[in-house]
Image (cartoon, rainbow, N blue to C red; front, side, top):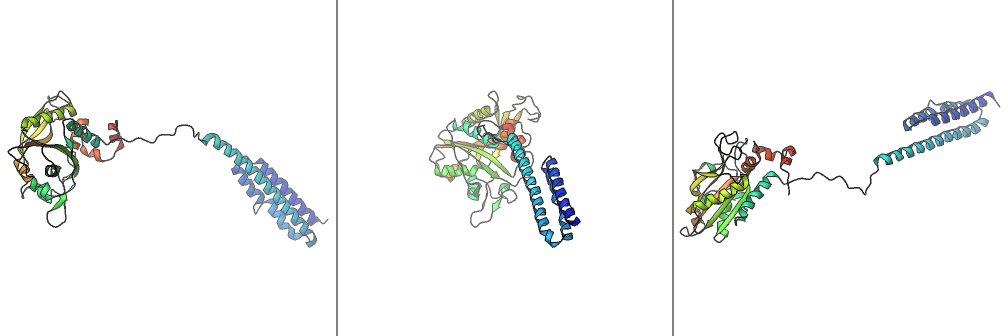
Length: 353
């Protein structure tokens, strides 16, 4: 056997022994990957031994080539066995730490709640339903006939101006987003037979600068009662019951003269401050009273518009901003907070659905 053949054979066997030792010494998958590069890479002993095959004769090259392939196979088999061992161990560890017991109850998702404005509407409506009222709704895109003409609003009134009302282009009767829920009162009187007792909540829109007490899109709730013999006393008694249910049974209310085109006489209703009980504080601006809503006796013009006998029927109406009522009831200083979708604020009012 020539020296060249002995050197190649010895190099291959050394590469086998060195490769198997490095694989055996690998402690984890990362070390095993490093060992694979060192024993099978282009600069590994096995690669150098293979390159020496060119130095032997043709008659010995075939046998040494077969030996080189056998050495590489043994090293690759050792790598595969070691990798399988590591992967099996890693899988066992993952099963121990990550397995899920499907028989255990799952993690419940966060539970939402009714929005405070929706809850306030329900509370107000519930008060009046308890007094025999019904719930009515109407369109948010409304004709000027119902928004203004039927409500005795003069043509020159500022509320009819495009600077106050959102109008939608159209032919004939002007169409726009309603600025109050009063049109629902007219639509109700047109379709119902007397007597009528109803509450009308809904979204309204005005071109207002948004601040702590004003929104361009807000929620309003109005009430209407038309029957034989309705008086201002019925109005005050109904609103007193509402205010005491919402803000406290021991509170008083007062009516201050005011003007609205669709009621006569008209009034603003104040409720005694539920914080200071009339002594004066920051919430009521030291007045002892908080303005809640506008109200009054239904103007005969509205009843005549729908063809009701004004000699036989009288009624009263009132309207309030739901955001204002909710803010006062919960001590919220800025009504914009209700629409910012800040869960830190909204979850404070979580309660039964």
